[in-house]
Amino acid sequence: MSDSPTGVDRDPDPRPLREDPPAESRRTRLWRYGFNLLPAYRGTGARVDHIAADWRYVRIRLPLNWRTRNAVGTIFGGSIYGAIDPVYMMMLRRVLGDRYTVWDKSAALEFIEPGRDTLYAEFELPTTETETLRETLDPGESTDREYLVSLVDAEGTVHAACEKTLYVRRDE
Image (cartoon, rainbow, N blue to C red; front, side, top):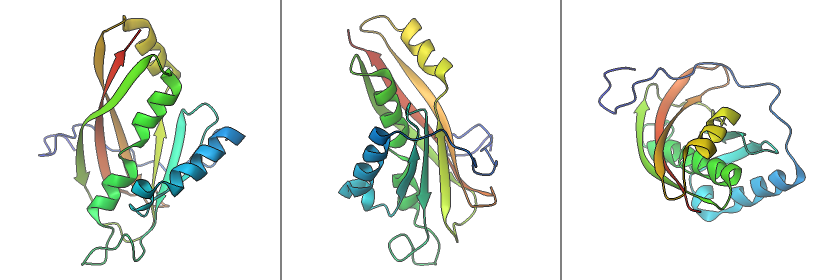
């Protein structure tokens, strides 16, 4: 996807879904239920399927149904973006804690193939990523971090890819 007009310059990840995601805790299961009831997220038609106990893995599902279908019978682009928009920000906020400010800064979305079936996205936040942020940011300093997430069908075919840029500042 290099040289794309959207600015997404990394190849999307075409891997199939993980069969053995990290375990949820009772607390993250409650977060998942609450997140799926939040009107702003519920309106996208997507659902959070899994949140790992340490918030380093999240999987969402976006079905093709009457709520997500556009005029040509495929998944509406707004539902695709709305389904993935808040996830990395929430993951970083939960993992880094209250001493950090995390905001979405920008996004570049590339539609690769129309979504004619349920799409999935898996978000992963490596321990090295958050440790690097904790070690390199002094109080009052900020940085931008980029994350790439692909929306795939059950076979792993990539239908859309989004590169999210997040602003992270250490507050203390």
